Length: 337
Ligand code: SF4
Image (tube, rainbow, N blue to C red; front, side, top):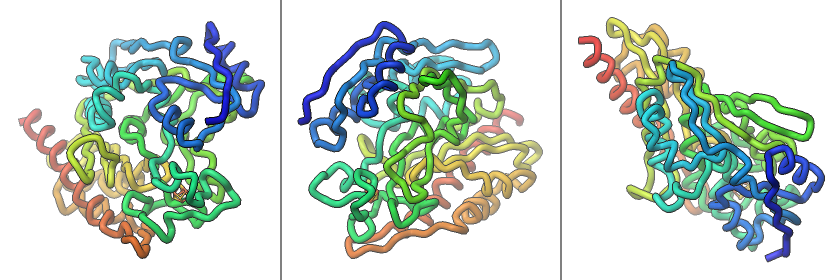
């Protein structure tokens, strides 16, 4: 492992200044992803700036279902918080679907958003990977691509973003608060992560030195009828082959409003706006749900490789979307009957 310095500043501004001053420095929060990458040689920072104690761990209620979650709030604490479970159940379900109890007790809200892909070649420095090094080829294109993208990828990278939480936050219209060397700004979570676009080395739109300090969840009656469904190879401690976060309002058998996001399909959590547009005003039936999912997948490009591809994800998305929306529609029907 490459030697690095370690600093624990007193506040967020000092942490931002420290990382901003050194192009090879990195923030350290829960460390559940970064420490693995240090040991594997995937991350080689010159300095680690510990932000675990300089960002808030509080979850602040705004009295109307709106919440502000400090970037230092642990995944386990967010998942268990009564206001999260009541007003944004998809978020609690997504967090509980991720990792293990031990990891959720260490992982922070900010760190969860910024975790890196679990593409096996990315973590193996003996294999070429464009995301690690722009001069190298992508090994997954001819290799093991079961967990890889079917939407928004390009020749440079077909990796997927691994966070369950981020998929729920995208569906729930969350926004991140960011503090950087040039001041603070807010970014919708749906715009925080990026597609590879020829440079997969960058996962997000954050500039070097910008620190996520909090996540805002808007007040929304729609969010109270939300859910997260994760399809994976085994029942626990596995990343999503496909996941769905959805919120739904049905009136008189018709979709009045809907939010839909997909995980395990792209380099970023995928907001399914085409499917949402197709669903609004449509009958709340399996037929509509399936048709909307297929509309979202119109531009999907699964890959086939000598080690097997990921074309099976097309049917998996259609099934997962349909089952998730069917469940939410039946909840609405029970509440209004
Ligand atoms: Fe690297 Fe992306 Fe290819 Fe995986 S899919 S090997 S992360 S370039």
